Length: 132
Image (cartoon, rainbow, N blue to C red; front, top):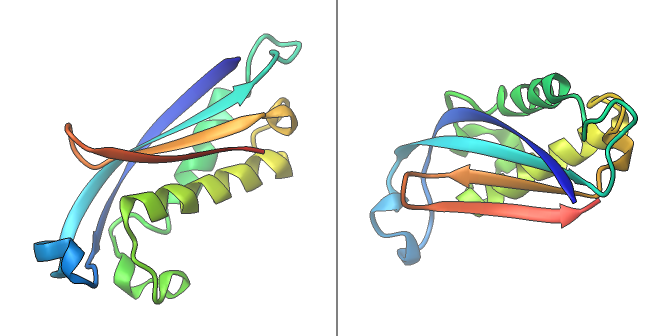
């Protein structure tokens, strides 16, 4: 399986509900490094998985509405715990839509799987991956 991966980052604020989260129930900030890997069985005729520039542009467009935001105030996330895992799936859904819509250019239609990894720190990360 071939893959290409792009990276960006976001800075957010949020809080959680429930004793499981301890002090994270209070408002706190996080800087996430976000990696998105696109997988395909074969390369397109140009010898790539997808256009890496378009993949990076799609990731930037997905992250822009979240960057420097208090996620507790984002209407789309009302009632949600915006955990690292939750955000991984949210970004995955947007990147899958980009692949299916042609936003990644040639090759996007043949993506077999996408993995979105959010790095919370140098010691913790979470991801969501699924086949398309």
